[in-house]
Image (cartoon, rainbow, N blue to C red; front, top):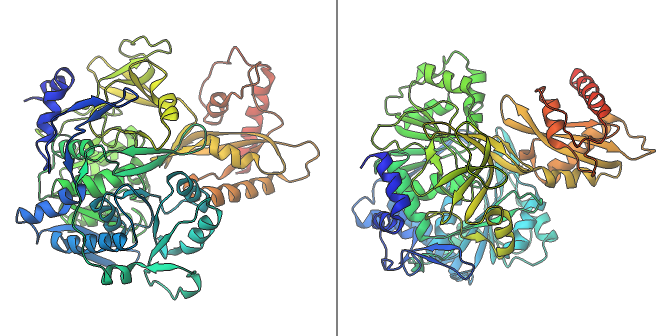
Length: 630
């Protein structure tokens, strides 16, 4: 079946199409009901089916005779470690940790927070939770304690699994002081704090009372067998930035997700079982869940856990070294990583050191890829660089190219065409579909296909308001887009106050809350501005209170520190500009888009609603002086 027919079948004959895809994975009880609705009239997939994700990722492959194949490769240039795990070894690690969790009283339906770096034990913890029906929430290791608190308070975990430290290039980042602070601030006590001691340094002084040693727990526990869960049983929660500043707990099902991942590995990524697939993403992001852990392992692909940076461990040839050493067939990363490599190695000299003959495709997502980066990649690497687009909410690609039969054409700067199951339209603000080459809102006709979010954890009202209320019968993506005459879609960026920093979605309203809490700040605006390396970075404009004597340099230093403490280094806020006033509409709304456009040096039209046009020249002068000073 060609790509067009595949897509059309997924839209015109949804039940038949997804039933066929569900047959590609193993169920303990195959579903009789393919699609149904919950009490809120939101679609559910395979509700009466039963399965287990840990079984699909491990046990099935052992039963099929592949137990001695390599499941995981851990490559850590920052600790000079390289470890390979077979499916047999993976099963032992996962099942014994799962047994340990059961011995602590965790059971199906409980939640666990996992706050860990890029090490195998993070993956073991995810699969151990899945094995016994415990819902996991992985928190990116770069987040500050307050971000951990928000998640603990929302999902109320029975256990928190963490490690003693992460490593940022050559610097050890202690996790336990951050965890201790979070536990202190959280509303509810977390019963079990499980700590994997990496033993990078003597760290006894960081330990606190009631810690359970991860390795001791594993060593003394009996292996747990997988438990059967229904298709709609939540596999995990993953929090993503929301426009209110409070992260949204995206809830993912088990059966629909497993089906969607298996489909995507074959059709979108074109990967055969037994090949090596590498998604260079942190476990704390959606890509890490779908394509560092569950997708490759369901499809029996060797997956790589990389602990390091693309340009500093030890040089900008690290990616090519890994691809060559482990015979990687396809890789997935954010364009930021390629831009960083290009900056360090503009002539591609380091590429020439490695044999990349195994390498077939490079997938890019998380942010829009600029044409200059695609050109560099094509010139020096010589394999297709395929941009595609999806969200934490979808769990797998929504736009992309079907690369399974090599009958695909790349359009540079486009994220591809709608993936089977995603009936995508471009609407104007009134809900009318736009013709080609007109920018509008990217929306998706309901029902969403398998694998897409079940909802927001314990908050249907917010789920409905955020995604389903803008256009009746459609999912609102929050992104702007343009479609061309051939059906290719070009993402133009967020239409809300969420910005994309190196593929990480961050809320500017959350940053504004932190900035405005400074005692000298009267009001502020944080916007995402263009950045050559990270795509976007936040930029804060602040108005000081009358009578404030703080210097511009001091306020910048203090606010940057404050944001780093509250959100973490991932926020990347380094620019804080003091202004006399902010541009506003006559009704008092801050014109953030105008500020962003002026800072980026782009042409703009003066908004008809602005209350005083003179402020534009004020802002321009201030920006020029600020940039000159920088």
